[in-house]
Image (cartoon, rainbow, N blue to C red; front, side, top):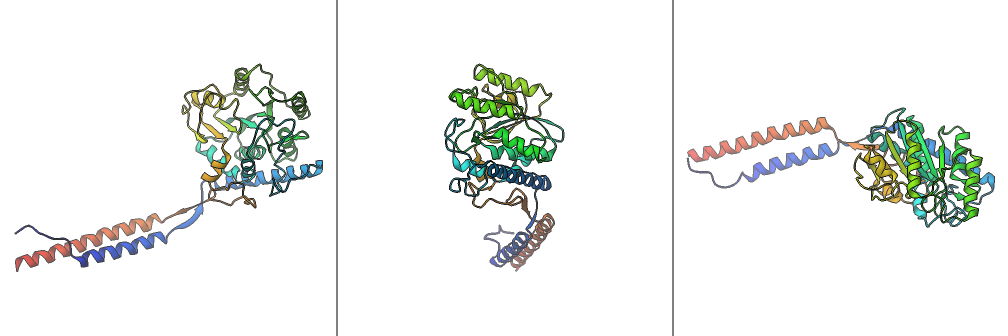
Length: 357
């Protein structure tokens, strides 16, 4: 028999192509919307954060702090002043607005779960007055997941953060704890500013922070310089036992010292250099969640950058995902294999019959 020349018949190709397209359409139409992993915990965390934001807004109004409807278009009461005696540096207003989305609490739930943390695990948390709303989102997630936090807060704030002298982040935290929304609070604080020891703040600014710490019964760490402050914070964190995770929320001075890190979940040993808290924990084999670049996180997880109006708890892709039917895909693959076999067999048989003539 001479060697076959030419291609499979056009008719055979058309049949296979048509059936393949039909099977693909069937599979694409099998897409269904299902709840994402940890859906219930995410919902509860976002709802907890939303309640906390509402309480803080009520407090802002009771104190008589005016809400700037231009710089705080959603009227959350979570956006501070551009300048105050406890303002340390420039701040990005869009980041502060993005962080007031209560669905950030759902993201924190997902990151904590992805880190393998379970109930009653101890988590070290570094907070900053610069991002009070994101702090509350984190604490709301911690509350829902029943995790044991050790919280150290750097009280001063960048522009638009918790920089009202009469309503620092420590005051906000105390208000929502008194209302029973969360149980855990800051165990100790630092002044913030350069080297996290208050450098760059005026004497009046340092006094305001000290008064806030005193009225909220929070001791302030005393340190000589940056290295000393990092060491004192580490000692405080480790004094509570085995730490399973470190979460950094907007604090850069002691957390990021000497290291360049990613945002989101950072695997153990992924930060080999640096003397800051993130590097220290990472080098000790502890996973880290770094929440510093708020707008990048908002874009990555489709939470919205400075959204107007604010999304409600439960809105967004963190809560739902789309899945295709595995059963239909398997059936379609089997059908396609059978059809290919039949078509090719027919094509070969047809060719052989022609050769015999």
